Length: 315
Image (tube, rainbow, N blue to C red; front, side, top):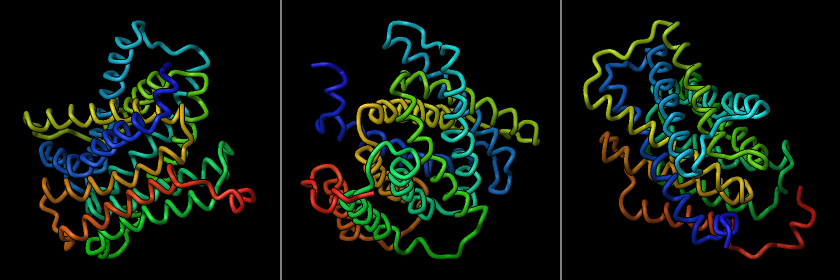
């Protein structure tokens, strides 16, 4: 059995996507902890950009090293690969995480988790209506609505408190940038190694953000060993999760993989509570119900029989 066939099997897709979601879910509280360990305040945009840049540049180096060892050859981009990596970097790293880091600092981890979950809808819409790599069907949209309802349920008491353009608005723009990056990975990975693309786009984007952060006067502050460890951990999260996710997108429809992203905010809420003590009124029963809705949404998109009559005329 070849690698391609293995990566299309649910027995491989489910554990790999869940691992990615757990890693990304941990990023919500860990970024806030990292700010604290590095003495970066919520309104210090320049230092937030510097922090993000260092994280992603390191993530890119780690991804290339690990990928080169796995492939038994150096992952060096060819001439035509560089523009693809640069364009992917614009959406996947520079825009997505510039908006995300600034927005998260001005919002709560719980509210950011809910807004970020919209990237599942956006990814399917962008892939279907703009890039035309798959059809937009009622089954996919129904699965997304059911899954998103679970995300809202677990965050119900933590999503109030108003709206700020530079807070919740930037988190939404981050989700939109991710949607375009997912479609680009799907398109580019048909000819390129997704690990190579992920690694080099992180290096390009991370370097850009680091230089921009320094230029704007950013600094790391009094970073202790905890701060260094957190920065390394966040780099590992990006290197591992995006490399795995990109590989899965190469071999599967965007909708099939993206719908698992509803687990990101579920993990984010749970870990925000455990690590940041961000309180939510969601008791055990609500958490179980939310997980059930998220799981049902995933099942509808990936396992439910196709509605041939209605999907025949889908967009």
